[in-house]
Length: 328
Image (tube, rainbow, N blue to C red; front, top):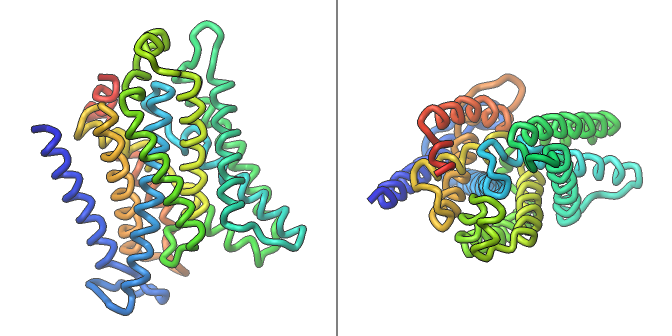
């Protein structure tokens, strides 16, 4: 009964978020546009597709990290995966400019994946102690430091670019949901998301067992080493592909898994598809909210909306027992 109510609630929320983005927009001159407009349908559908794909990817990345590390605070942004992808892609853009070349969409995803993996491995290395293994507090602190350092690297590379190149990189770094996404980037994101989602759902029982101690997980036949490396690669690729398309976005990968668990419980066969749906709805809603808020000289970056709304939303989830549901 709880599962049915949870799925009905998720579907209603997702449909409402998509409807809000399709019916609300802001023109280039700053005029708020309400209602369906046929001449702008392609742009709005492009934004919905981009936001849904990136939001689902970030949410699944957060779910995999939380499950692997047994840490309810783990997410691609907190642990520096998004920052690692941003730093690697910005460095690649700088080197390409110096060489008089351009970074292809496929290369940007590969470079971003490498940056995300480096960030995650650094967090694990500095968040581990010989006596206690991975310590949740140390892991989060390591993630904060790694993310800050990688953010500084991205900023340095950005400011070494000429002004003509810097503007686009700066706008991407603040977060955006493109209305006319690069076909190559969108296809790459959807491919990574599809493979990771199928793998996470089919391995749902193994992910459930990973919430036990290492000895208990091995006792029920879970190949921990292989699972962990698969999760590291999958979470990094998801964060990199989403970052390549929409820039570094905070809190989507942190809030979405908690919301899904709060509605449907902790079994991954239920949580994986629910997390995908929540993540997609959250980013589409953030993009609709961005369109409503008026700003001078352009459009509000969607990354600002994610950061401002994500923090209170996560605190509310904590207040309502989402972490208790995760532990259960």
